[in-house]
Every structure is written in structure tokens, then in C-alpha cells.
Length: 143
Image (cartoon, rainbow, N blue to C red; front, side):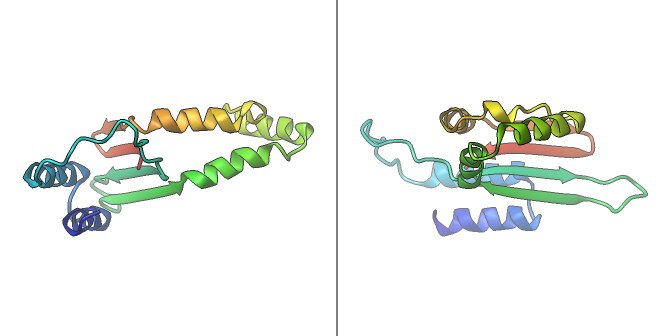
């Protein structure tokens, strides 16, 4: 990663620029860069390393004001967690599933398979989800 791109990402992390502004700055940097040769078809796409969740909110008039949450979860942690579920006894997974369901998280841990996680991560590589609300913006993406 070049120094200018790193500075833009640091400004984003510090809240000095919004995600949209950072994206525009990075796009402008890429336009200034001389054309690089196209990627060879034989080189595999780099594997994403993180699942990123960014939440920004403006705050309410009588509240604490604007805020930002920036969560970066290593995908290796998710991969390891899925593999660890194979070590948990089925009775325990059933109890955990029931608790998760009651908490509003309808995930069946008995159905998680490492190969399915890899497929999900592959699909997330090209997905950016923006949820706009007058008070908040949520972004979920892989990097």
C-alpha cells in the first residue's frame, strides 16, 4: 500500500474524512497513477484478510453527538471458529442454537462447514453493504 493511500485511510480512521470522501480521494489517486499492466490470469486473486464493519452516526440534538465504530475482524479468526465447532458436542451446539435463536440470531451452528465459510468469504470479497439512515451509515466489506 502506498503512503498516500495509507494517509487517507488514517484520516478516515481518525474521523477527519467520511468514507465517501476517502473513497473519492483514493479514486483520484488511482486515476493519477500510470496504468499498471493487467493482472495475469494465472495469478490468483489475493485472499481477503479482514471483515470490516464501519458505523458512523450524526447523533441526536440532545445526545452525545456524532460517533464512529470501526470493527476489523480477522477472517482467520472466523475460519478457526468454524473449525472449532466440530469439537463441540452436538448437545451443546443445540443449546447454543436455542439461546442464539431466543436472542434474535437464527444461526444453526451445526450446519457451519469450513468449505461453506470459504465460499461465503469469496462472495463477500465483491460485496459492500451500505445502510443509510438519517442518523447512521453502516458499511460491511472484506479487505
